[in-house]
Amino acid sequence: MILTQQLILGVLVGALYGLAAAGLSLTFGVLRVLNVAHGELLMLGGYGTFWLFTLWQIDPFLSLLYVAPAMFVLGLLLYGALFQFVVQANEEVRIKNSLLIGFGLTLILHTLAIHFWTADERAVTTSYGGAVVRIGVFAVPLIRLASLVFAFAILTALHLFLAKTRWGRAIRATAEDWEAAALMGIPVGKTYLVAFALGTVLAGIAGGLVSVSYSISPSIGLEWTLKALIVVVLAGLGSLFGSFAGGILLGLAEATSVAFLGGPYREVVGLILFLIILVLRPQGLFGERG
Image (spheres, rainbow, N blue to C red):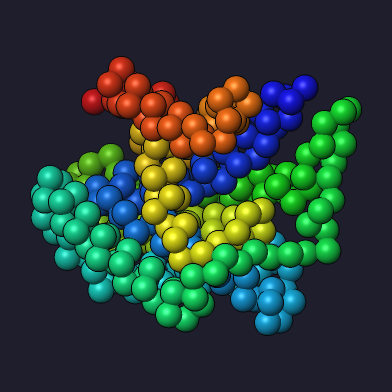
C-alpha cells in the first residue's frame, strides 16, 4: 500500500517534470540551442504566480493566464538580446555558445532573484491546498491532481498548435530541416523567435504549478534544469507527449527509490536512468534514430 501511494505521488510530480522538459525539448529541437537557464525561467514563473496570489489574491491556476503572456514577452526579449546571435552559427558552435550564454543568464537571474526576493522558500497556500481525493484507501492531493490535468491540457493545446496552425507547421518544418524550410519561404528567424518564446512559456507555467504544489526559491533553477535534461534524454526529441511520459517515468522511478531505499537516493536513481538511456538508446525511448 505504501508503494502504491508513493507511485501515485510519483505520477503527479512526474507530470511537472514532463511539462518543464517539454519547453527545453522544444527549444533544443527547433533551434539546436541548449538553454541551461531553463530552470531559472521556471523559477521566475513560480515567483510570478506567488506574487500575483500574495499581492492581489489571484488564484494560482487563474494567474497562469497572466504569467504565460509575461513569459512569452520575456522569451522574445531574451531571444532578441542573446540567442538570435547564437543560431547564426553551425550546430556544434550553437550548442557551445548557448551553454556559455545559458550559464551566464543563470547567474544573473539567480542573483537578481536573491536581491529582490531573498533566498527564503516561498509557496502559494490556498484554501483548498490541503484537500485530497480519496481513491479507495489512497489519498491523492487535489492540487497536485489539478496540476497534472493542467499540464496535460497545456501539452495537448501545444500539440494542436503545432499540428494545425500555420506557425506550428512552420516550427515543425524548421525543426526538421531549416535550410529546406527557408527555401520554401518560411521565415526561419521568426520561427526560431516564436519557438523560443513558447519554450519560455512552458517553463513559466511549470514554475507556476510548482509554486502551488511545492515551494520556490532562487536555488531551484539548477535542480529543475537537471530534471528537464534527464527527461529529454529519457524521452528523446520530437514528441511533446513523449516528454510528458518521460517525466512520469522519472517520477515513478524516484517514487520507487523512496519506497525501497529512502529519500536520499531519489536523485541518484534519476541520474542512473539518465546514464543507462544515454548509453543504450541515445535517441531516447520515444525518439527516432538518426
